Length: 138
Image: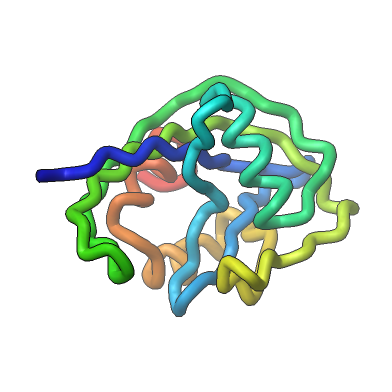
C-alpha cells in the first residue's frame, strides 16, 4: 500500500532571471516540503521556501506543474507516493540566503540560464519537467 504525501515548492527567479537552487544530500534541487494538515498548498509552498532558503520577501505566482515520485521511507519502511505542487515565485537577489542545515541543505545558489545545464546534470529526473514547463530548458 502506498502512502500519499502532498508537498509544495517554488521555482523562484530573481530580477536577473536566475533560478534559486539548493544543494542537499549530493544533488541540486528546488526548495519544497510537505504540507501540514491545516495549510493551504500555497501557504505550504511559501513556508517551505522561507524555511529552506531564508528568503522572506517572496511573491507567489501561479501553480504550473505537479510532479509525482515514489520512494521507500528509510525510517518507516513505507512506500511513499509524493505529489509536489510547483509554483512560480519571484525573489530578490539582494536578500540573504540561509541554508536550512537541519534539512541537510548545504548551499543555495542563484543560477543563470547559461549555467543551468551543469546543475541539471546533478539533479533529480523528476525536476527536469518542472524546468521545461517553466521555460528554462528545451
